[in-house]
Amino acid sequence: MPKKAVTIRDVARQAGVSVATASRALNGKDIVNPRTRDRILTVMEELGFRPSPAARRLSLGRTLTVGVVVSFLTRPQAAERLRGVDAVLTDSEFDLVIYNVESVQKRDHYLGTLAQSQRTDGLLVMSLPPTAEAAAAIGSSPVPVVFIDVHTPSVAAMPRVIGDDVAGGALAARHLLDLGHTAIAFIGDALEDPFGFTSSRDREQGLTGTLAQAGLSIPAAWIGHGAHGRYEARELAHRMLTDERRPTAIFTASDTQALGVIAAARELGLHVPDDLSVIGYDDIEAADYVGLTTVRQQLFESGRRGAEILLSEIKVRSEQAPAARLAPELVVRATTAPPKEGRG
Image (cartoon, rainbow, N blue to C red; front, top):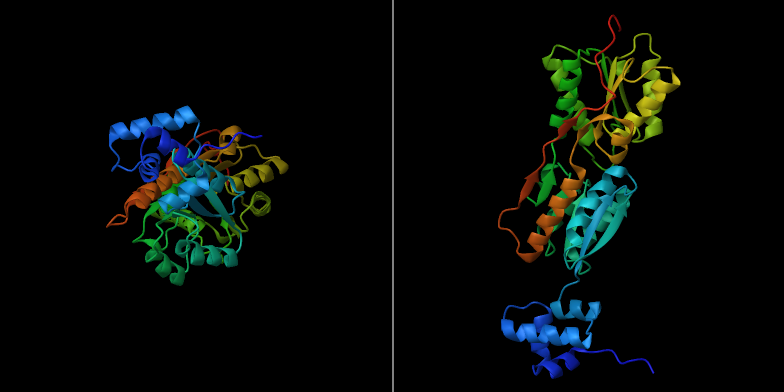
């Protein structure tokens, strides 16, 4: 016959305490005398007691889970942020539940129901601006919610972790100007965006604003918008690089798109960075492999800080919503260099 599992009642009997006291010691309640708690924990170890996760959740009145609503999970930016979240939760009692969003309908469903449900003790929302209606409901939710990389005014009074994409675009512009480039192009995401993403627009704004301060503007033919992807960026770059007058540098709204630009340059027999400088945004893992100059937006750190804020909010809700601001950093590698003499 299989050995009977040790129960909390067995532990209480062996330690000479009530079941309620044994349960409080297991759950770390401060009302248990420290010496009594130590005796109970010793008995648990001696008997090989393993608490049922379901029973533990029931006794605490909590789910012991943290939900993450993330857009386009397969993109490297999302994966890197999740690594930061997991680094924090690994050392906690909470399990991680991921809700992947690739449609507006899914976004509205998750943001409209999860914060009001009993399915999670806290919620992280990554790069998904909520509708005004969802933001109002989240603001009064019994479940704490922390936003990461969401810049819309509707979440300004909620806990959040944000970067500065305009400043990041300005960093890229200043780097190219310092190298001597004046023929600079931009490739970013499509202007029509059902999710309300702002990063590509803000990075373009940072670029064009800084160029304007230097007395420069980007010709319309050198501004390309399209679906977020390497192949789409390659096609946009191919069009620019076969123009009668081609740019000497291209800044893209993401490293993924920068990889597409590099592919287009190689197909046309252009050498990076001698014939074309390329600078991306994000500093994903692949950027280091290919030596891509980029703007780092601290993806891992944003996930880590978001998880830390959420665990703090689960423990005690803040009177004033905490906000962590992460500054972008320029990472210079091998894909940018001064332009060739007499080009343009």
